[in-house]
Image 1: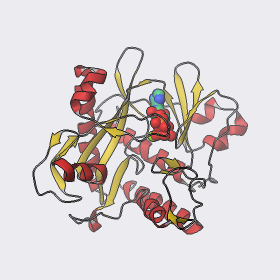
Image 2: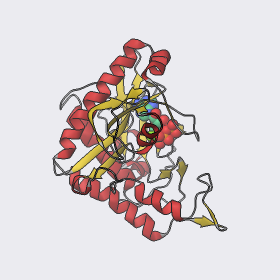
Image 3: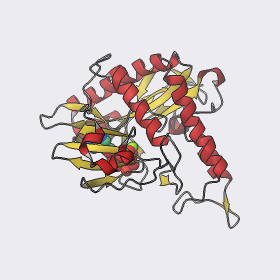
Image 4: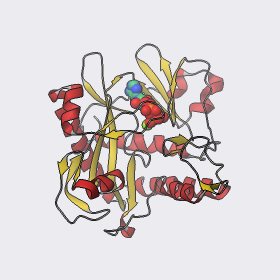
Amino acid sequence: MSNALHTSELHSLPLLARGKVRDNYAVGKDRILMVASDRISAYDVIMNEPIPGKGELLTQMALFWFDKLGPNGLNICPNHLTGEDPSNVVSVDERSQVLNRSMVVKRLKPLPIEAVVRGYLAGSGWSEYKLGQNVCGVALPPHLKNASKLAEPIFTPAAKAEMGEHDENITFQQVVNTVGIETAEKVRDYSIKLYLAARDIAAKSGIIIADTKFEFGLDADGTIILMDEILTPDSSRYWPAEQYKEGSNPPSFDKQYLRDWLETVRINGAPWSKTPPAPTLPDEVIQKTSEKYREAWARLSTV
Ligand SMILES: Nc1ncnc2c1ncn2[C@@H]1O[C@H](COP(=O)(O)OP(=O)(O)OP(=O)(O)O)[C@@H](O)[C@H]1O
Ligand SMILES: [Mg+2]
């Protein structure tokens, strides 16, 4: 596993943007080199310490899923991969920065929607359900518990927040108002199909994918294309199947360990405000978090 990389610094390509995790560089006019750094964010705040191996693991997992669900696999919808080798689009001395952690993708016009699918009730879905027995306007049966499995997966979109803001849950009608009925329906149908297929594949490795978030973009012809990372523990809730218990939060393979630790932090006697600056992560938290990602991939890659 390569050394931890908090921020990539490529000079051979123009930098387009740094997200919470990825650094995006322009490759010509129509492609992007997405470099997954080892940064980790929690509550939308980027931590100062990188998590060794994270960018590499996330990239391998996303590529695994693109392979299973894309044109060479179940062929559910088109995706943004170009298949180009990232090493070939940077200068030779920069190759170590992109090795195993990058993808060359088609540059798309992102839809301003996070396409969330939930197969289980957790996180903000569970919070919303408790308030009004629905999530994003989707009515649900009574007496569901935290982590309950839903009879059918539901599409619970969110509006993509500006940098530094939190995403906001919205109704399907609001998606229709933003992108039009045809696109909204297509995005919803693709998302549900992708989730169902992934859920079945992950189940074979003892992983429950409780929920996940997809992003889509439009190419120059207006075709809807699956983009970003997919089905990683950063964009999804991964639960170990053998520890699943309705009514309680399963110990997940994602950032939950970090989030739980952050809840215990005291700064001058007060809880951390969940705004920058982030507290300094102890080595143990860095190592444990790194292990969680590794464990998720160790399970998944056996399928
Ligand atoms: N094919 C693509 N074309 C254009 N943009 C893309 C493509 N794939 C992914 N992106 C964008 O690249 C960024 C990935 O970076 P990252 O995941 O670190 O960002 P983020 O912090 O999740 O998102 P944000 O941009 O909201 O801060 C996202 O903004 C995503 O929408
Ligand atoms: Mg992202």
